[in-house]
Length: 254
Image 1 (cartoon, rainbow, N blue to C red):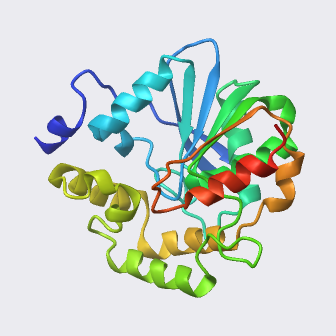
Image 2 (image 1 turned 180 degrees about the horizontal axis):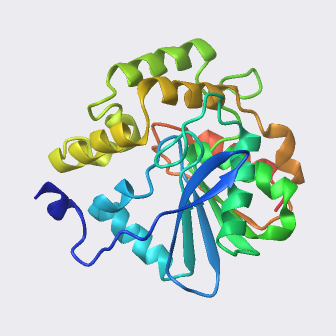
């Protein structure tokens, strides 16, 4: 009954397929059949099937799939993809993107990197410029933690405290006030978010992913991005400050 309420009435979950890269199976889906391919690279948490259970997410995915063929996937260690013992690095995310595009028969695509997925997209844009029709960085960042010349991120100590708080609440709607404050008091949204977290990862597995984000730094790559790029960032973003988006926009050519 809850699922019926949350899922849009006309939605059908697309078939999930798998492609192997580095011996790891990556779960992906394709939706729609428009003239352009759009690859969505998720943030720190994802599940290609559970995402369809939320009415707002479902409506957004269907709208995008009317613009072109939407390709979405779970990065290694997340969602329906294989769990891995090693941290999912920026380079690993770039390899996952390439493998999924090849498996889906996509020669060139618009690449959309959301939040923590952005650094991997930047790596891919530098390594494979011929495979990109464009790049969209959405609520994303170039560096995961504070530095003297990157002052608008958490220090390593602050980041570790935030991680402890997130993991302590895992199993419930952990940190929904940070990631989705507009629905933080919505009972159905809280239940869906809690279920998404449980399905997507475990506390131990997501800890490695968060540590990889904390240590990520793609600032040296920004000047090498040649793809047409659009940076989108909400002014009041509580997870990634808007200054991080302005940093990207100011250092990617054009």
